[in-house]
Structure formats: structure tokens, C-alpha cells
Amino acid sequence: MRMNNEVVNTLKVKYPVGEEDYQKALNTIIVSETAGIYPSKNPVVTILGAQPGAGKTEIQRITQEAYQGNIVVCNADNLRAFYPRALELNRLHPKEFPLLTSDFAHRLKDGLQAHCLKHGFSFSLETTFKNPNDLNEMMDTYTKAGFQTDIKLLAVNRLISRLYTEKRYEDMYQLEGAGRNVPKQAHDEREKALTPTVEGVIKANKFRNMSLYKRAIVTSESSIRSGVSLLAENPPDALNTFKEEKNRPLTDQERYFYKNVAEQVLFQKQQRNATFVEIFAFKMEFNDLLTQKQQQIDKSLNKGIG
Image 1: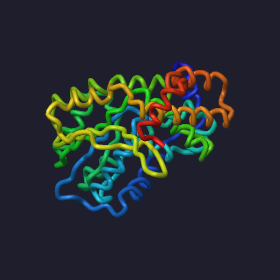
Image 2: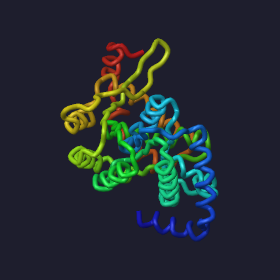
Image 3: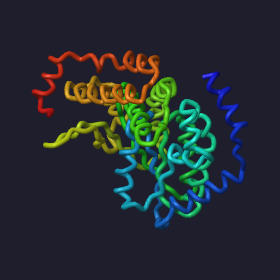
Image 4: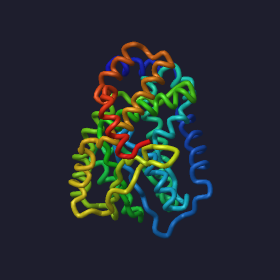
């Protein structure tokens, strides 16, 4: 991490970003993200929470559908693209890119959020739930501005969210020649902080509604995929419901499905000539999925996958 910080500091000197860059990016974002959005008489902030790779984008889609599109998306990760020379920097320095763009992207997110609060636009906010005090203070701010807060949480097994950070990177790299890198340490730190943060938010009770979601395997005659489904709406014991789903063992069906995902990611790494160290680390981390025996696969297939 120290080496990454040193490289990032060097890049900040080599590629300086000033106030003019920020204001230009913010103005562009406000125009594009609020086009067609109208103020609400009862505006709502929807906070989307989970560790990286869990599937917050799916919950975002569900939220946008519920508001029939009349909601602004405040997602710092999406705003990294507005960092000057973002594509070039992500391609040349994929490991440092998240840290390099973090302050700029979060400042843009805060600027877009402030615009929504000022004009009465309902908006959604993606977060990894790192600190309960910060979230509770945010909800106090929303209340003072005349907004209500809904929370949508996604309870996902740690191994699966880690796998999907890898899959997202490889998919993006395949399409764009660069991907959004989430180091294992960063993922694990946020995943570890998630449950105590949820507990602190529930205890403070500053929100209107809490919806819990889970990953689900969706099958049809022609395909099988991983999606998101509602687990519970305002459950009486939200914390335990969340913890039980997040920490439960994978089913045979899930293990079979995610084995195929892991094999696909491994193939993508090999295709782009990833380093030996990177491929070895991936195999070690996901060894349990990758080395499932054929008998386990057959057992899953007999349960209706195919």
C-alpha cells in the first residue's frame, strides 16, 4: 500500500488537477444526470449499501424502476471517468487509478448531492457502509433538508463479492482495455466493516424504510445467471436477517454456478496474459470453488441446473 501511495503522489504531480477541472466536470455531470428530473414534493434519498462486488448496481436498477427514472444517481465510482485523462491513466496505472481518482470522484459526488438537496431532487447514493457515525450524520443532514431516507442493503457472501470484483475487472478490460481494480485488502476491509456499520445505523433508526436484498441464481430454459431478489422489507430483526443471509454457506446450486464464473474469470486472465503471480493468487483464493469434484457438479445438475 505504501508503494501505491508513492506512485499515486508521483502521478498527481505529473498529471495535476485543478479547481477549473473540478468545476468543469461538475457542471457537465449536473446537466447530464439531472436532465429530465423534476423536483418531488416529498423527496427521498435512497442509500444503497454493500461491500464492493456485491451487486449494488442491480439494486440501483431496481430503485430507478421504482421511481420511474425520476431519481438522480450519485455514485462516485461512475464519476471517476470525469477525472482528466481517466482512460489513459486507468490503462497505464490500473492499480493506482482507484486511489488517484478517489478524492476527485467523491468531491463530484458531494457536489451532485448538494445540487439535489438544493433543488428537491430524489437521489440514490451508493456506499460500502464503512462508518455508522458518518451515515447517521448524513441522514440528519437529509432530514434537515426536508428529505426522507430509505436504505437498501445487499447481503452477500464474502467470497462471491470478491469473485465479482475480479469478474467486473476482467469484463471491463476485455471491452475497454482497462478495468476498475479493487484490491483484495480494500474489499476485505469494507466487507469487515459492513455488519457493525449496519448495526449502528439500525440502532440510530434515522431512516424511513429498510429493504434487504440477496443474490439469487435465476434460471430459464435458455440461460442461468446471478441476479438480485428481495429478502425482506422492514424485518423485525433486520440485523440478524442480514447477518444470516450474508454468512450462510453456499448451496450446491450456487457452488456449481460460481465455479463456472471463477473458471471464466481465470480464462479471461490467461487470455490477456496476466502475470503468473496474479493468476496464482486468483487460483489460491478461489481454490475451493475451482477444485470442486465432478460428483458435486453432478449433484447440482440433478437439482435442476442446466
